[in-house]
Length: 425
Picture 1 (cartoon, rainbow, N blue to C red):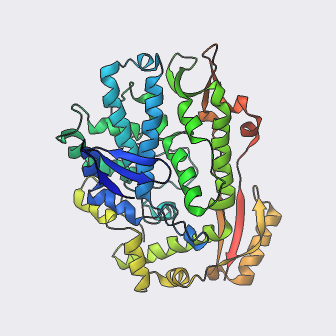
Picture 2: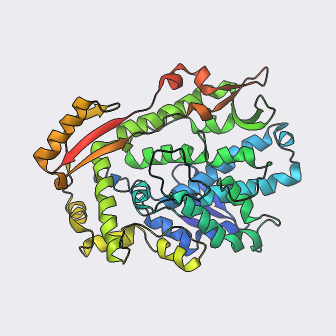
């Protein structure tokens, strides 16, 4: 990306998805901070370049893209008659809210772990007294990169957000954290509708990474009509009269295509059998690297308001880990990564919940190839679409909100995959 100063002190950043992204001085100071520059050294798709060699784009450029996408969506929403009034906002509020949206979108990934989501497998356990702990969940609950991002915003970027000489007066870091779904801050009802703009089923994050990943991998699976999606964004009201993010009825097909683009990217790229096994290898290698750094349990530090502890976590990026692998501190899995000698899939894809027969097949394979030299991947799954948090479609004539799953039979039937794979030497 190329920076070029113009007379208005705005900076243009060249981007393959948006053409140019404009940054003001406050945003530049955030981006130039060591914490944000770290994202240049974290690849967006971990070791996917072992399969797609050009998949070397980073969380840095993605974060800029999410900010631009969120800004474009906000501008369309704010420009439509009556939308700001529904939120209790006047024209003087618009610029401030726009800035909060931009900052939240820019910083949403700032605490990401090395090798993106592969690094989240070695996050520390979530304490039972944590506000995000779900006592009804049957899964092992761990911290996620969002927890580190929110802590970095709170500890590292608070002063730049609230006191920058060229920033908009009156913006508080808690307003940015609220859009990042931090449950510890006071609710800001005038911002609630924009939470789904930063993190939702038709959010700026998803809208950017589908196009960006497709571009860098050289595939078309994640393509959809970006301009149509942006220009159909609006505000509706649910049955309780609460403002919600919505898409105009005339653009419901682009909402459908966004869901299908995600489906296609997962089935063709993110769930690729070789890409998946490298997530396993890097996760195991990371544990060894952390142990060599004195972390005996092979897990990262929990997110902390202590700046020294937080900086210890932020020292880790792909470059640091790769350096450790080249020094031989990644164990046998690190060697496999360096030599591209990954485990191979043995047997078939087991679809759906495992039957007793399936479990026996896998057990027989583990005995055949050895427990220490094999891996069972049971996490090839995701929600293509969460019906309980439907994308809202706003009818043109009545203004009534209709869930996308009622407009689209494809989305309604898309289901949830559950695939199990066995790998071995």
